[in-house]
Length: 161
Image 1 (cartoon, rainbow, N blue to C red):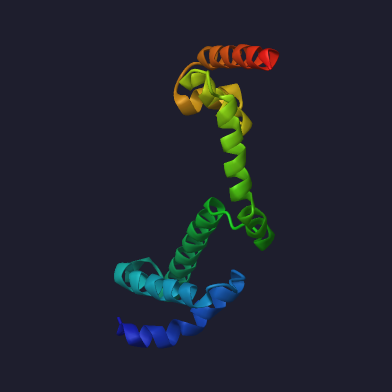
Image 2: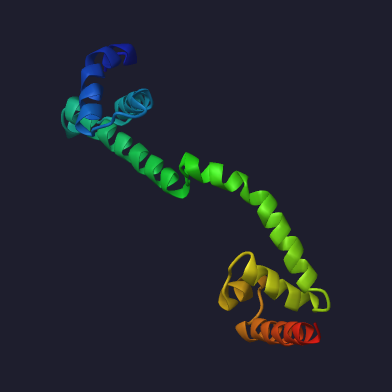
């Protein structure tokens, strides 16, 4: 078989054609490198008894690029890129949230730690009873007991004022 440099010169148009056929327009250089890696791996694993190298190289390089596309898509799905307006909105939220937490903590005076935890997570984090139970690794009925105790004590507090 030829040297790898000769293979690169010979199969460079094929790599570009695969990139074009897969409609790759972002990170084109990265996919070109992936094609070169695929070409090198194809040259290493090619068996002359099983057919022509050009068909094998084409299939191997295209498969390598498709795998790379799949990995990139999975990675992008896991990442969230909010629009710029989101960041502008949240900048002012921190001080408001701090004041909100401070105010809620004043209401939690006289509650047990778990009852206060229910009030805070329900009102600030907006979690359901089931979600609080999962987060705290307790049963749903335990969280319901925290809720009923907190509501009872808060009603008594309001009645006294």
